[in-house]
Image (cartoon, rainbow over all chains, first blue to last red):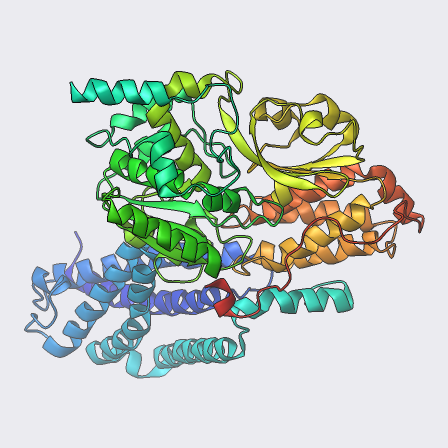
Length: 198
Length: 434
């Protein structure tokens, strides 16, 4: 029989792993959006990794939520999985977690329905990812004292640093990008000079 | 009683089934609405959606825009979608070597406009557009044709005129849908195909203007009349843009299955090779072309196709490699620059090919071209890389003797004057795609 403590620990552990996975998915998403590459991986593999890791995140997030509610030590109603700020326990911090889950759910559902949606709709919803990340982070730091010290704090700061770096890369790369219509003439000019693009 | 009188009148007015041209006016003069009504009678509406589709199926009409897809299947696919359909008449032939859509719009606009209304009725559409090149004189002519029709109440749905940019890919159906929505004429990723979700998400029927004109004729004179010429598998007539080896040429209407040698007058004007289907088409050696007919039954086994009916005979004094290189360079410049293989691959292919054309090649040039061709094939949102590679490969095969000469630093051509038409100006700004 699973004791209350086991569920509580499981919830905290999967929460930490979800945060790390979510950071990785965000970074990979930024690489995909700039059509960037990772060492040793073709472009389509970066996209594949982004998708696979996001589904893995869902699995860990699911366990994180279910164990937190199933655990009897504190009372969080099932309603709190979808409706924010309905938990008497840590109303604000748990509520932020719910907000993040709702945003992640919107991003994943629209991605699964991508073939049936207009690209612009999918894209608009996918931008929610940028909002969901800080909300998740604040939820993590607020709801759990685990992350506020020691090596878990270091780990959290490392993920934040990585994500912020990736966002910086996206902004700089987008600013340096050649407008679509100029790309073909530029490639032609390059190949004519050197015989090979890039 | 009235109906049978009308039917009798139509039967009486039915033109000879085997006489050509059917689409283009016999006088050679543009057909005014009055002349059109006198020759063909009013638009033969069928009274409801779907009624015409069976007639089109019996006729065996295929799309005249290049893909030769059975028209009734496209009509059925759009009609069976949920939502109110949009119909777009596609007259924006991007193919520089083709003039037939423009010629048809100039000389027989009312056949096209009849066909547009009939297709809209058949699929239950609420909106129709006519998509043509943004040329002031053509737009003016079409505007006055539409005003004439409005004055006599011929059109049930008002036609919106949409101007296409002078781009090779402007007529690609997803690019067309984007342009009709008011955006740039850039191809989109499929699926969804436009028949599922096209203009503003509505199921969209995109038909070449010639296909619509054929619909206007079939709905008047019937499938048997339509099938009286052409072959069993590919019935009817089609418009072709013929370029003879002596530099002459014209848009002519011909029965499908006519010998290529007859169309290009190869006996009078000998050629070293024949380009079939335009710049996404394929070269054929003169020996092959001489024994083939203009039909997909003959051409598909050779990797070529009738396409939009372009036939160009290359005279003996030109270099097939130089001509092909100019075309590949043009195609690379016309890439929408959206997909990696096309954006990176086509300029590389064009540059490598031009080295061969201008006798600056190395022993590995030919292999390099083959390798890059394989890398871009089937990897674009649209068929631009595929069509370009098909054209290139046929050039390397048909002009293999000339390739060997070039590798040895020589060329058999006696003139370097350009032969195949290449439009001036390549796209450099987003506005060039609008």
